[in-house]
Image (tube, rainbow, N blue to C red; front, top):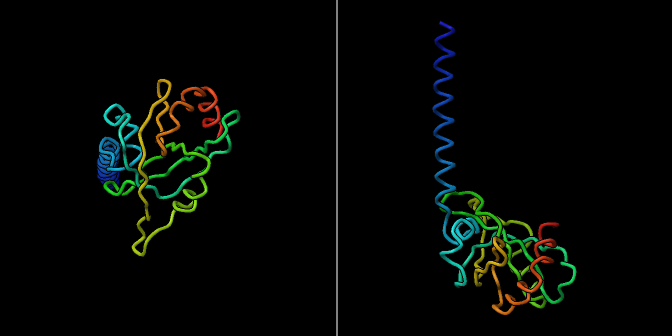
Length: 160
């Protein structure tokens, strides 16, 4: 009788694991609207277009050496369609806008009364520099600077 119980448990456990993995893979394949995961999974569809991301909070990247006047921010997004993190998106802004954005989006995720993360929308242009660095250009005035200093930007952002 004990062996039968173990077999039933194993079958139940494997079925539950398979169901969970299928759900996780489906969620990854179906990134929610206005999330970093959506734009990073298919950047060609949005490249050089104005996009919206729903930000739960931001992380300011320490200054990138050799590039004056720009601030690099990781915007944390939330996927309400799948009820999970929506990934991080690099946002590059002019230094004069950085403090205002930090105050607006905050550095800690806030939740509403029902426990859902509070998000605020940011609009910018989705850009790619080099062969894979995807970011949002907040002001539409910095692409040429980022492109000219790509190696410094890539090293500075990866080092944070």
